[in-house]
Length: 138
Image (cartoon, rainbow, N blue to C red; front, side, top):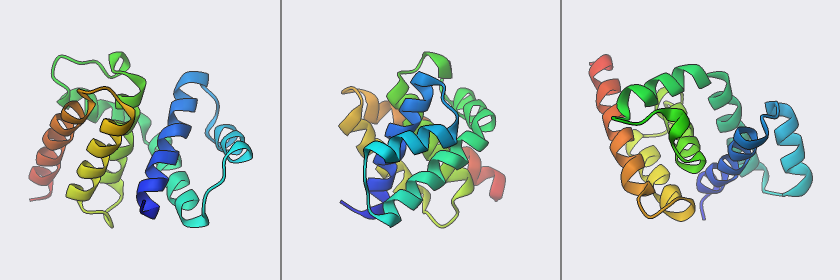
């Protein structure tokens, strides 16, 4: 497994913890690293995603809500919601990662950790967001 994939999977676990327990980011990360280990690069990427996503949470939720037809962000499964949040953070704020890579990774992680419909659900929303982001930059 690649470093960034590992970092994304770790970030999903931390984001899930934050979503369920409502802990502050620093506290959640400390608790997580007290119980799990990872190589330094995956850990760095995980923390980049978690801290960035939480910092821009309202904007990210608005973007997801705008593109999730007939779905409210709060009614999505916690796994799908956090994968989407993480991916939207990457799409908007991580210019070093190609959008296609972000979407493919999110879909694969959704298939691994979510329901049988998660991959298609995540893909549909991220495709719509990516098209809108491209239109804004052109």
